Image (cartoon, rainbow, N blue to C red; front, side):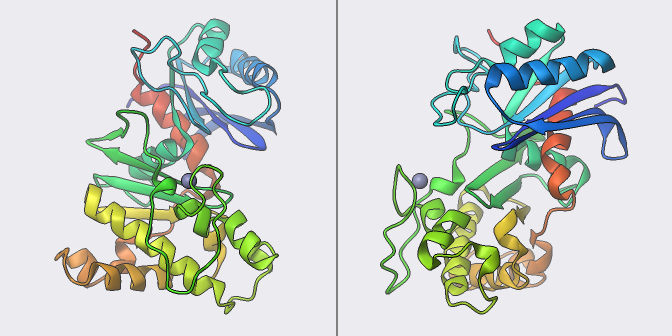
Length: 296
Ligand code: ZN
């Protein structure tokens, strides 16, 4: 990655953030506007970038995305309930408007790349980034690149064993009681009738949430063997949740994964993000600098 000028777009559920620059210490211009339809949102982003003429553009997008370069719909949003976005050709629209290379990945893979490049996960490969908010998402950097294959990781939809006595049906429309269905912000709200930030810090639901998040992270440890896991998102604003998750992960693995990171300073293995809410758009800049797969 050189010191060129790149453009980054983070398309989120409610807002879209654009930046021009080369990294966290070099953001030369930015814009933020509501995410409306795909046509309108991408046209607005393209108009912003036309003023700044980046050499390449990266997109860190909500999913699901088609990231198969051999697919005729590579770079598009696939089926989404979001109005005006199903089938939207994000890469094609930006490439036609700006005539520069356009790289795309999921918002969480973008955030993982940014935290690996500049944030809480430098020198850690594989690095996993998990966010727990309105959904649960996970991205990974493996060998210096965001991980995808069949599609892209969907860590929030892994299955975890039920805690004894937990009879909550689950909130995920596809799987009911997957990890996201049990422990995301809306799942917590459905359990307690209040949003997570309105609950007491010692509400019993946090014990369940810590347990489920830890089961998810322990599964990630056993599958990907990451050198570090960065955990962010609105639900983690709870002051002691991350600490409880760390202790539960250690207990769940029960000494089987014998590495110092888990036996000793687990607070250096499961960490908070360093880039905060900028991780997504910085990840988009990193994607632009790295270059993504091109449509065949
Ligand atoms: Zn699910």
